Image (cartoon, rainbow, N blue to C red):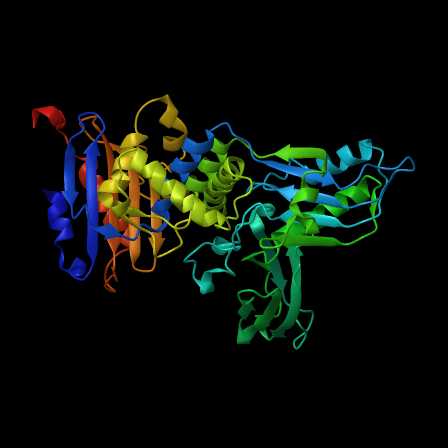
Length: 483
């Protein structure tokens, strides 16, 4: 078979492949190569997270973000207590500029007759009992846009855009501005404007665990303003600041300060008994979970898929507490989600020895799967109306998402729906395709420990060659029972 020849090429001698393709129509394994060996899946691990979230909550579920008060308003319009903005895991809060979530909540509070808050505005992200980064995430990724922190109270996809432009004269400090409002970190600016002939070499660094952004290097005078996307250090505080600004627009004054709280702190500085007495003011809701999954898979959005993974873990914690309110269990949200994943996969016939998933985004190199296990997951979601939110969330070759620029003007364009995955030395693709004979296949391609030679093409092109070979099959497989 053509695929055998591709895998046997000398440049893959030190690499490891895991490949499987199975017919959704006949059930037959059309092709397999080391399909039962564990490989690192990179972002194709998001397929597991998407399946778990959809199976747990359903595609129509919406995630709330709720504004509470610790006291009722007095007759003079003063609220003698705190406002508590509680996030429940919505990764899309603020992502739609047409929907002003902060103004919606501020208007609701003003309608309660409140004009002054004699207390703090607490931005509460304690719903997730987990660090702000996933297990196995590398320290070097945590400043980058793709390593944005996963928080129960997220806003603007937990990103800050730094617009950098040169000063007015050689020797001046560069000028930096931050978007969205309230996202500016502490700044140490040593980025110097230099003559055009000296060129630009801009450095931006926020060390893991720190809030200070260091700007250094050079920027050529007269050069255009340039944007850089970085991870927010404290998303909850930015959400709180945006709500405070909306309250001001509605004529509500907050006398205290905006403060954020994360696990292992307790909710808003209040203990569990106080939390039950919080007075609900209003809430906003996320888009349907099916839309969040689509966003997470189409463009491989790490925050969305990590938050959905943690959302499952938080639901598991709720169930454990309801079953035994007196139990002292400090299991973390991410660990609960991983346990739920193992239980879910076992329930659909995928043994724990074939998959290990510890984060929802696929950034961890400790994630492992066999090609056969990932293909089995795809087969499980491959038919029926209930699987449509999963299938429709996948990028379409040559059309959209992370496959928009791949397989264009080939016979596979529009006939492949698959999730991409890539990190240093790891390249993956898994999803569905329709062959030349009209047969529907679920397939998984996992390439690990691959360092391409200098004269080789893009590693993604190696995967695409196999996809094209599968798509070119012009005979349908016999039903599995007839083999």
